[in-house]
Image (cartoon, rainbow, N blue to C red):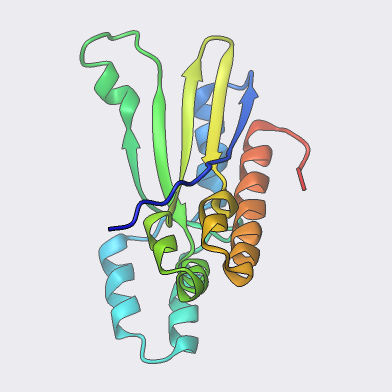
Length: 168
């Protein structure tokens, strides 16, 4: 049995934009494939080039696609009709995930990633757990490099959605 401590770093940006605007901005930048058809096309791909074509067709302008989402706000409003809105968007890019998992098999536990959009007092918060912090304890410079690239994509997506200048 192994237990590994992981120091998680979370990227959070707050905005005065309304919840629906932020979610719509994220939705406009990520792909939304019909998942059953996407899985079938991935299974039928015989080569890495064919797989890349399938994945590329499913990605949005940010180079990511949505796998699923969980509307926590909908659940919260079952008890309180005025409860805040909150959604967890599970997104990623299978080709990026593949590169990380080649170097750190446990990276499959962290990908695809989560973007949390949550209404709070004073505005909307968008949060993302930085992949680089999740793979760092495994000591793979190759996986960390791929994770930094993914982090840059997701941070750019979030910054654009909230109207913040891009971060490094």
